[in-house]
Amino acid sequence: MANSTARSIPTPQTRRDASAGKSLGEAIAAALALAVAMGFGRFAFTGMYPLMVRDGAMSVATGSLAASANYAGYLVGALLAARIARDRAGFWSRVALGGTVVSLAALALPLPDPLLIVVRFVAGVLSALALVSAASWLLHVRGRHDGAPLMFSGVGIGIVVSAELIAMGNLAHWHSLALWLGLAIGALVLSALAWRVLGLEARTGDAPAAAAVPQGTLGPAALIVSYGLAGFGYIITATYLPLFVRDALGPIDPIHVWAVFGLGAAPSCFLWHAVHERLGTRRAMQWNLGVQAVGVVLPALSHTALAYLASAVLVGGTFMGTVTIAAPAARRLARKVRFNLFAVMTAAYGVGQIVGPLVSTALMHGSNNFGESLGVAAAALVIAATLCAL
View: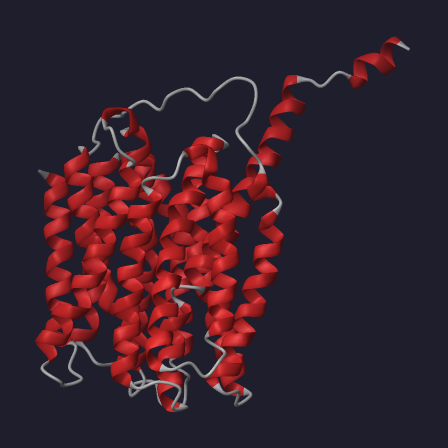
């Protein structure tokens, strides 16, 4: 009996193992939330853009307005997320998931141009809500700080899965409207897997210790500005990559290059998390933004398939790394400011994403030459990296 009783009492090791299992499950749920709201709801439009134009579902001009509306929605969503109480973060993560599935399904309908633009605006709002709410839920409500890299890798996973779904549908000669329905069904399945876990509330027991602010960190103002410049720097590549690579790839579907972008993003979150832990925020951001600048400018220097693939790997392998570095840095500074720092940073990122395409349009003067635009974007990233060194 004594041995049976001893075996029934959980040891410190079994408690740690159980906690690690729960932490992994919660990080996976947060990753799925970002895969749906960001990878599907936000970035699938990049791969669908040329297909919708091909099928006459929208014009290039409407597509540009829809993309701009999405960026504007992202900004609005970030501002709204700044007002959400932390104990409601799980609820709003669920709202973002459900809304994203509906917005994807809506795009499967032959919408008039104004309504299509509105749907993309709403999708932008939902993607920012998901990013801020899922991060707040995992890092603050559940206290699973070690799950941050896995959570942010969800964006890259969502890009890969949605891109390959688009590629398969395109290979089967599906109309773009049918492809949107397929994406909605895929997003619904992923949402269902995360739904129950996202309903968990704050952990009972010992509260997690306040995060120390290590050496080599950035102040709130520098973090906001550099993060906003990062939004400006990556957005042209992230929006138009399948458009400006299609002539260089021959028979290869350009959507596969977009999948490479996502393949670079998913594991990079773990790499940049390790770099951040080792070097601190300043140096990690410098390296991240510097590598990203090289990736952004490559297609302007060489119009070859190799250059485009390298650009997809480098930009894909750094843009979510920026978030993986910045979000924990914001958490460590949370007690030093009176506002939701990560939400404000997300809003700054949104402003950068709105300004980027506007500058690109002005520089192209109606041509399809992205060279100057990519040069300006790379310069913004270099400025951001330099700011991190000051």
